[in-house]
Length: 431
Image 1 (cartoon, rainbow, N blue to C red):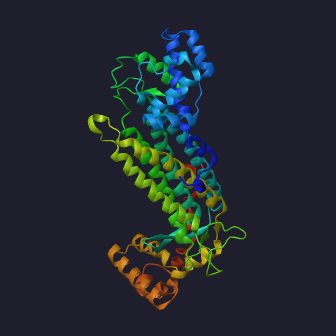
Image 2 (cartoon, rainbow, N blue to C red):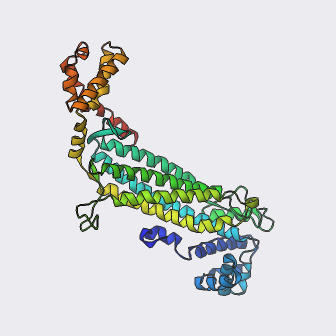
Image 3 (cartoon, one colour):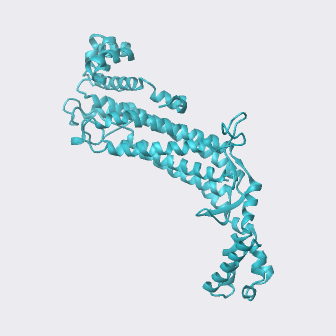
């Protein structure tokens, strides 16, 4: 992972050599439980507690010879402990340690991502309340539809993030699992009671059934959830990029003092951070696909998943952490162009009130198909000739048979479209 996208909190969880410390944490937890059960002499455990540590350089030196990372790790730790080191790893297989340790890292990474999600939601909530009644045109298929508020657009994103938090909670739970069940999961050389006590000590739950490894549907669940969250961030970034286009220009992502937008054109202020977020979302989806490929292993256990996970797990956690932090910064500093929103709303000459006229005609006894045809004809005339819609419909005698000009003008009140904004905000707890 590139340092430029790595933030200290998440980077600390995945730094070089992180796995050795977590492996040692698992090995010590197993030894403590076995000591309590009388399976390891207390004196030996005291030696282990006092002397057990990891020399990363020594691990790498041994691994260059034995070509097995866990064996190299154990040999390096035992060198530090001495004779009592023989009690480490009793009855275990490598994946008992490695998979359980990996679960600890994924759990902690997930919790940090949840914290990031909360930060983004807080930023969105603040800006949503600020722009609760900031009227803008709604767009469907990229075309002007009916008015809404920018606050409602942000509320839509908040609700989606809330759903993503629920998914993340489920994914964290799915990977917060350990296994200390031996070479093929039968507990032949270590009892289920040891596994239960170790997992409880580590804050994990025990896998109900395992073989040599934890099955990779759990990790795929975690990774696809990260990709889904990335998809939501891309959705937000794409909308901001669209709204920042010169011909729309309703919002602008923050542009720092001294920042440059183009090496050739000094006037440029490009939405580069949103573009970065959109690009990174593609990486998350690719990594999620790789995680799903890891589910099917020969006899439910081979090594094809290992090399993949060394890349996709840290990279995805670091990427999403960066994306969430960047999007929080964007939302917090987003420039909202209220006057431009009003100007854009007026570009379609009041056509955004067409449905209100249609409904009013029907309410006054007109057949819907006839009403639709009249309003559509007048709307197309206003648009094609650049006339105010109200002036065109006011001269339409067919419509005049049902609605007075006063009636018609009342139908262009923008406040009508905002009457339930408060209700929507209350649903989200935004008050």
